[in-house]
Image 1: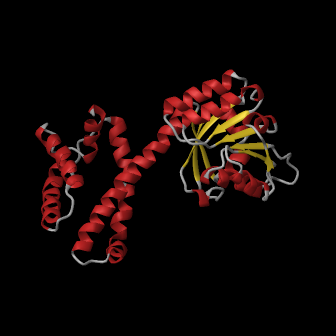
Image 2 (image 1 turned 60 degrees about the vertical axis):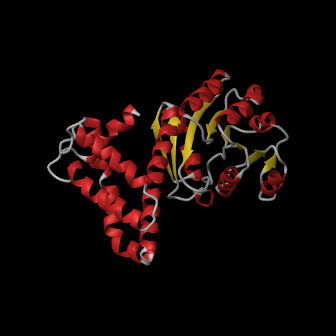
Image 3 (image 1 turned 45 degrees about the horizontal axis):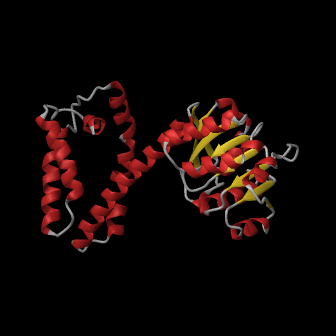
Length: 295
């Protein structure tokens, strides 16, 4: 996506030129936006200047040269510190904070920014740096909807699937964390299975090809589980928790025999067994959300 020929190109500042920040700056340059860049170390600044960016000696100078300020540094506390040093230049700007951190930190940074007369959006980038700027790149945004709408074209140049999820900037952070939480659980399960298969002399690629329909079907369960959790209705006529325990026992026994780590399936068995002991054997797997809520 590029700036329309008849559209006034919005001046953008990018603060922080790590792997992701540099990718963001390149995507904006490729889309036709005038970009000013700042980074603590100058080597990465030179690389972006060679691509057409303008250098700034300080965060304040970069912010003063732009209407929209993109921040991507190491942690929410650092983002707040950098913006605090540029506070005098913030009035009238829009800050788009694409830095990882906690939901509370994003809200605190938003308050800092708005107190100094600027608008604030927090975005969570759900892709790796090489995919930044692609039509399929997902970025969740939190902050006032009218601020998102005003800069939607620019935001879509960073990721075609730019999505406003809430007026609360912290919600975007939680969306990102939730995706990562699910990702790590799925990846750990896949790697445990890969270790088990490999021990038996089975190529993981062969398994993946044959099992792909079953693996794909797993994500199709999420809408059903989400509905059960939101309604707090867990009774199910099929696939109840009681049926999971024998399969878990088989997996743990097989893993032990083959010398494969059993921590992951043993933890899952503990959760299922506790739910059965509490009388929830005929409930859906979604009932286990109560364990995590208590935890």
